Length: 300
Image (cartoon, rainbow, N blue to C red; front, side, top):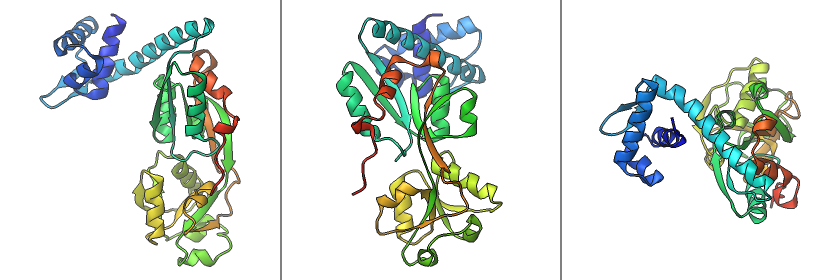
């Protein structure tokens, strides 16, 4: 088994298509197919189910993908570690972040990193916190800016970024807008909620708080971006429970503090692999946290 076999396998698994994977790898499709067949012969198992439209992983293929991604990440880290010892930081920095993450200005941080290390290729993935944690665990991501969950502590390190309370956003004409504060999540029973997909940090924090209070709620309007959530609330189609800093994003909405929840209900962190598996690029990026470029921008 050669590294190129694993690289070819991962590319086909990601693209679910031999032609697209071959174009991305800049190899012939026949050569790519031969590489996959060689891997299947060695492992004595089919790795893909092939159709005329796409290919999908078999059970054996799914098992191999986890290990192949980990092996390739370790090889990449080895190359980067040697380069770092020689005083040169190069290679790839793969990181993930949720939208509008609290405690860090991601774009400013990456701009500062590029100025310091122009030879490093930056790859950014935006997703929910659960998927980001899985990416760091599997070695697909060097680090991630995400919402903290208890499960993250099992195999990942975390560095705190920020902690803040949750607040209710509503239309100025909504009944809640006249209240100084919502004393308890139970006061929101029966409301129509706008919220993110279950994998997102704010949704996880809200679900956890309502579960702890014994209050059932139904998310009628589920979105995967911040602006869609704000638009729906702005049209008085529902209310949203979000981290406090979201109140600056749409001044036409009314922000009502939600009592009965921990002050740091929404805690954001940097998720990292174990120390021995942390790439030089990730260490360099972490070193820039706290610099002016990395700090959250003031509203307005």
